[in-house]
Every structure is written in structure tokens, then in C-alpha cells.
Image 1: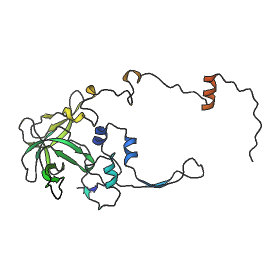
Image 2 (image 1 turned 90 degrees about the vertical axis):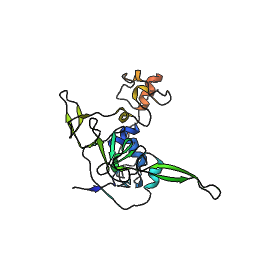
Image 3 (image 1 turned 90 degrees about the horizontal axis):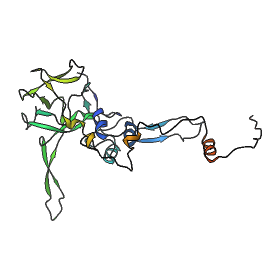
Image 4 (image 1 turned 135 degrees about the vertical axis):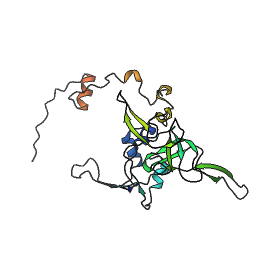
Length: 251
């Protein structure tokens, strides 16, 4: 079995879809640059020294907590790579190890960078918060992540038992998950398409302060022309340049 380190500079596809943010923005958010050459000077090449590997956890890469966790070096751990991700938010899975072994639950969060999923209401522990000298605090049930390669399996919708799956194509060319035990198709739940901003695309309400209206997306709002900024301003304001520029010489 081939294993690699989970310390990586790439984010998972599921994380990018959940964020509903451009990939370039997410990379700028968690990127830590220690030093770079001054910009705008042709004598300096584009060079920078930045962190190459990052510690991924249950904190999303675009948050401040993620940056704080990566300020110090940590020991590398090993992770089995998954070439084709098969678990989605809303899937019913069975716990295969631990004190909740044999129980069924619904996946509520996915952390693809660590092969982690969080199953709602399972694999929990009690965490005390708000404790002081005069107040004992409150006990909160906290869900711990589970590894998809060892701790969980999808549930066959026909037998309601844990099963391995494989990806196949239907006669219409659609890629689907199929149970190896019964050859039953396991559909992708609707919760898998939820993002940080909305439950579904149809229910999303446009914000006039930050969103481009859908009726103007297809319109061409910019016409490229071979002009400088000064030439464009002069044409719009009706300014004509009649002066003859002085000759310049380069040595």
C-alpha cells in the first residue's frame, strides 16, 4: 500500500466546492510568504520563499484559525491517498471501528485533505466549556472525525448493510456509485451540493452589493481596444493632442 504525507499545499476538490470561492482566493488566504523580491522592478526576478507544506485539520483553509495552526512546525503523519473520492455530505454510513461500531449515521462534514468525515451524532466526546472558579461550565457533545479508509463504509440502500462500492457508467453515460454486494446504485444526496453560502443554487438570493446580476453575465461589458489608459480618457473627453513630441535618444 502506497502512503504519503498529509502535509500538502493543495486543497481538496470537495473543500473548494463547499467554500463556493475561487481556488486562487483560497490559496492566497492560507499561503504564508516569508520573503519575496520587490515587485515592479525589472532587475529583480520573481522569487519568493513560502511555506510548501501545510497542516490540514477541521479548520477550513480560508480561516484565521487555519493560519494560526500552521505558524509552527508539526510532525508529519502518513495518509493513504484516495484517487477517486466516494463519500459525500448526506451519505448514510456504518461505523466499522470504535465504541460506535455497527451504528449508522449521516455524514455532516467532509475534510478531503485528511480523508476525514464527521458523522452526525456519532464518535463523540464531552467537552467542558466556560468553566471558571465559581462555575463548573457546560458539557458539550463534540464530534470527532473518522477516516474513510478504515472507520466508515457506505450503507447499501437495499440490504441496509455496509458495503464496498465502485464507480460505473450507466447506458446514458452518467457516472454512478454501485454497491458491490447487490449492484444497487447509491445516488449522491442533495446535501452534497450544499455550500457555505446556500443550501441549493435555486434558493440563493443575490446580494446587490457583491453579486453580479444573472441577466448581465451573458452581456459583453468590456470591449478591448489597442489604447493606453491616457488615450482612452482623451477619446472619451474629446481631447486632441496637437503637440509634436521632442526627440529622445537612448544610449
